[in-house]
Amino acid sequence: MHRDAANGARIAAILEQLRGLPQARLADLFAADPARAEAMTRRITWPVEPGSDAETGLLIDFAKTHLSGEALTAFEALAEASGFAAARAELFGGGIVNVTEGRAATHGALRGSGTAPQVEEAEALLARMGMLVEAIHEGALGEVRHCIAIGIGGSALGPALAIDALTRDLALVDVHVVSNIDGLALEAAFRACDPATTIIAVASKTFTTIETMTNAASALKWLRENGVEDPHGQVIALTAAPEKAVEWGVDETRILPFPESVGGRYSLFSSIGFPVALAIGMDDFRAMLAGAKAVDDHFRAAEGRENAPLLAAFADQYYTRLRGCQTRAVFAYDERLKLLPDYLQQLEMESNGKSVTREGAPVDGPTAAITWGGVGTDAQHAVFQLLHQGTHLVPVDFIASIAPGDDLDPAHHRILLMNCLAQGAALMAGKPSDDPARAYPGDRPSTTFLVEDCDAAALGALIAFHEHRTFANAVLMGINPFDQFGVELGKAIAKQIESGEGDFDPSTKALMAVAGLG
Ligand code: F6P
Image 1 (cartoon, rainbow, N blue to C red):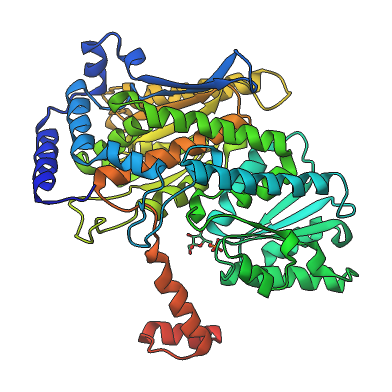
Image 2 (cartoon, helix red, strand yellow):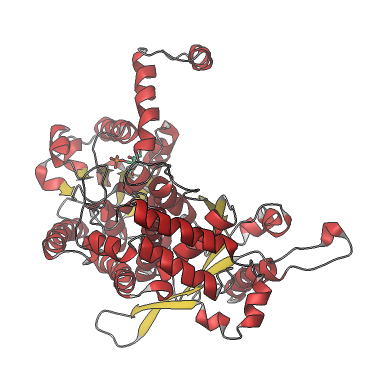
C-alpha cells in the first residue's frame, strides 16, 4: 500500500501511542498474565513425511519479548494502517511489489505459494533440475564425486548453509561452495577435488558478477590444466540470464534457469539450490520446499498476532523503533545451523537496510537492525558478557533442535539445550548484587525457536519464516525489501580503480599507489 497523507498520519499516531505505552519489565508481564508463556508461543507444523498424519514442526516462544497486550493491539493497528493484508496478497498474487525495479517477487511460487502460472513455471523448472540431478547421480555425466559451486551473496549463502546443515552424515556428492574472489578460497576447493570427477556449478542470477565470473574462469583453467579435454562440458549454470551463460560457453542443456522475479537472497529454493539437491538428493530438496510451504501457508492464513512472522516483525519494530536497539543477535544452538546468522545477515540487511520508503520519501525512523550472531555455546564464552551486563539492549534469537545431530553421549545435546534455555532465562531474570560488577540488570529480551529436528523440512521452514519476517518488517516500515541499489556504487568504483579512470579522493589515491593499483 502506498503511504499517503491519510494513512501516514494514522501510522504516526499509532507510533506515538506505542511510544506512550508504559514499558513494563518482562517479569511484570509474566506476573500480570499467568498464561503468557503459552499465549506468546506459536507453532507451525507439517507432516513428518508427505501424506503422513503425524506432525512435526517449529515452535517459537515470544514470551520473553516486551510485547504487552496493548502493544500487540497497537501493532495490529499499525499492520492494518500499513496495508499488511493487501501487501501480502500482492506478494503471493504476483503483484509488482518490487516497485523500484518494476518486478514481482515470486520466491513463494518456488514452493507452490503463488499464482497458478508462476507455480506451474516453477514446477517445470524444478522438474528439469531434478532430472539433471538424478542423471548426475545415475552417472549420465560420467563419474561425479565433487562439485565446486561458485557464486556469491544470495547465490552462495543459502547453498552453503543448507549443505553444511544437511550433509553431516553423508553427501551424495561432495560440494564445496566458493564465494570469495580471494584465490585462496578456490585453491582450497581445488585441493579437495579431483578434476576428472568434479563438476563446476556457476551460480549467478545476472551471470555478470565479477567475483563469480573470475572464479569460474579459473575453475575452467584448472580443469583444462589437469587433463580435462572439454572443461565446459563439466559446467552447470544456474542463472536468470541463460543467454549470458550461453555466451560464456555453457551448453544450453546444462543451464538451469530461474525467473528474474526471484531475488538473489530469496533464491535458495530455485535452481540456485542445485548444489544442495546434488548433495542431499531431490527427495530431501523437496522436503525443504515442503517445510517452507508450511510456513507460507501459515503466513498467508494467520491474522494479526497469531501470525508468527508478523509477530516477530512486531517485536523487531518494537526494539528498533521504540527502544532504540541498533542490533539483533541470532545464536544457533546447533552446529548444523552455524551458517544461519550469515544467511540472515544478507536476507535482513540487504532487504531492509534502506533509508527511503517505497515512494522515495525519507523513512520516519530506523530501518533494519544490524543482524549479527554466532553459535552457542561458543558465543557464551566470548560475547555474551556484553549481552548480560553491557550498556546495549540487544534482542536475542536462540535457535535449537530438540533432536541431536550427533551420535555421541546424549550429554552433549542435553548440555547444549540446557545452555540455550539458561541464557534466555538469565538474560530475563538478571541477578542483583551489592557488588555492582557482579550485578546483572536482567529484563533483556529473547525469542526462542525450537525445531523437533534440524532436517531439510525444518531448515526450509526456518528460511521461509525469516523471509516473511523480513517482508512483514518492510511493510510496517513502508519500504521495498526487494531491491539493493546500495551495493552498486562500490562495484562501479572498483571498476574505475581497475581502469584507472576516475576522480579519486586523496586517501584512496594514496592507498592505490601503495597497493600497486591504477
Ligand atoms: O551485490 C549484491 C548482489 O547483487 C546480491 O544481491 C546477490 O545475491 C549477489 O550480488 C550475487 O549476484 P549474482 O547472483 O547476480 O551473481
